[in-house]
Image (cartoon, rainbow, N blue to C red; front, side):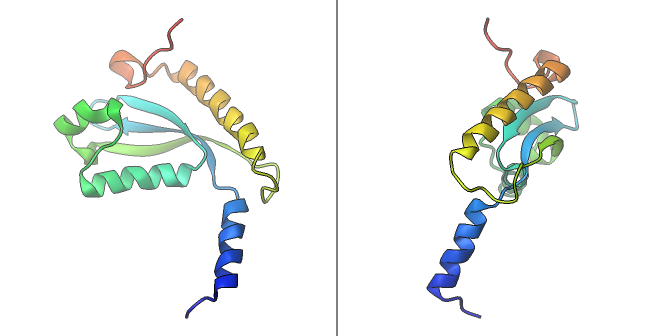
Length: 129
């Protein structure tokens, strides 16, 4: 079933204007319990990225490099911590992304403060004062 160019363009535009789940997640090492807490504008994509890295046995996340080599990629799991609910079904203006990014960043700070994923507990680096 071939799609014509106009239909492809419409589908691509609808996808670009749709919201993907966004929020905060952690990558947890099941062998030692250490976590890396991150935020994303696309939680599904972040989970898929980890799954791809595990399948290809390649790691592009600098903080995990040492333990990835020692424990293997299968020792890491993706866990969603919190999700931001979009105010609308679709995005009318790309500038809305900035507001959502600020929400993701604020939520990430809250989770980092709560979990303290530093040192023996995690892979995050404390903020410099």
